[in-house]
Length: 276
Image (cartoon, rainbow, N blue to C red):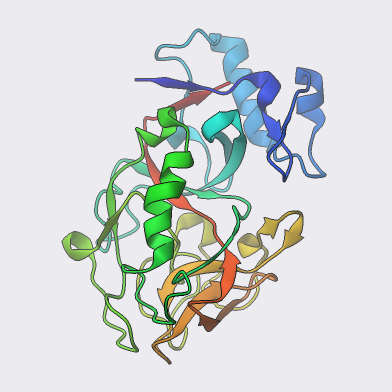
């Protein structure tokens, strides 16, 4: 098993993506500002290294041992570190394929703003969307190869085609991908009006089960809370898509040609090891 190493002197980053080099003592005390370090997870990393060393090989922490809601740092190309939230372990339900023995991670902050359809039209067909193509093409290739090579190929439930039909394809007929947007159900929306049942609630969002505002859904872009896309189409009109509002609420009123934030998610093997 390959151990992914995160240099302890490169474990913070600013919103602009510029590495900050700090000492271990400084890292232990960083909890605010624009430094994206989870002190609880960092403590676990440090304690593991203290007890077991950091010699590579099979040493490290299996991602399945990190609690739901905690964060890990993963490298993008060029060594820039980004923070990801552990949002689910294993398969959420029979609607999914390939999630078994996996852990779902979601980028904590918004990567950038993009159009869902790429501006070509306002249809709400996620499988044919420019955003899905970008996530599994250009963005996927921005992930460090040591991470990228381990991301699982999975199938997620989705509403096929465009329009207002609420029917969902799932299981073996789900949408094949490596990187995906979360759905309304996965972020705890429950059975909201005009939302297809394209998923099951992920553990991190369990207990919300409403489209009303919730802090767990809030994400920042350049330090400010912003809207971000879901993969769920609205079934009220063939041009509309669901998204999360800056306050953590949800809306089905976005045109596919609108520009909102992107929070990529993907599945890593449960025994994938990460260490400092």
